[in-house]
Image (cartoon, rainbow, N blue to C red; front, side, top):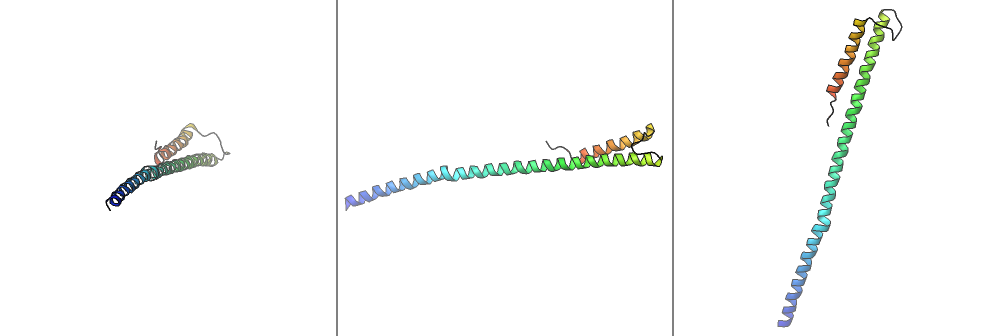
Length: 118
């Protein structure tokens, strides 16, 4: 009976060591690597979302600047028509400066509304 009890204890110790080894292996090989993959995926997702946000900001800025240009040309041509002249006419210096100032202010507003986030 003593021999079999000794063998049982030895087998129990061996099984215990094997289970511990398997647990440690699982933790380092599977669990930690899956956690690292999750961290990498989160970082990639965050980077992708930031890129989308920056792209949208650039699109909005470009649209705003284009609208400022459209307003500029419409205002310029409206002043030409009010003088009974064709589009893209030469305006008096003070009026041209006023229209140019409006364009500059509108563009500055665009850059304030859609600032670069870098």
